[in-house]
Image (cartoon, rainbow, N blue to C red; front, side, top):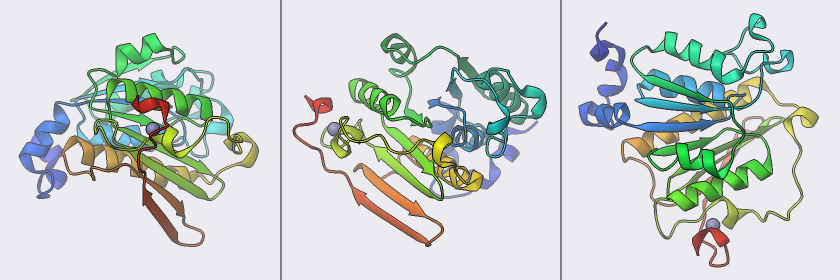
Length: 243
Ligand SMILES: [Zn+2]
């Protein structure tokens, strides 16, 4: 089947064009977490033709996932998420390479996945993991797109670790701060994480084609009140990620 036809609606945009599509096809993107955020993020990146998607999640499919994690079916209950997701995404776009990791995140796994990637997506749902991913992206100087959704509000961070003067997640939040509510306690609208995950894919594509803002920024999104607030993140000289 013609790859030209598959990507025609994005190649026709001046922001992408043939040159941008070639950049997307040559890229490697790490997606950490294949839940409510990772489902739409990985789907859109696969659809866009990202050359290699590296899917990372040690979790298995459970019934409470299904209201928002639409890559999975009832028949997948108990199966490793990344294996089911990879199977679905390979059928969706056979032109790309999809690799899977069910190991828990460690320095060794970051060293395998991050150094030759162009962008990392944090689609996880807990603070220690977010700080660990941020630190790894700082170490390897890779841009990081982070998403979060609780209830009916979402947050999105784009951290330009590839830029020496940009701020990061650790500049923004202290590790000693209160852990916010977890999705399993507070609940979440399925479409809310769908929007944020799709937005993460959008930001990742902009990074891949060189069309993203050069500063780090953080967005707070509340569809209920129809508000989006955003601000740049200056680098904190005391942040341990920039020494
Ligand atoms: Zn920082």
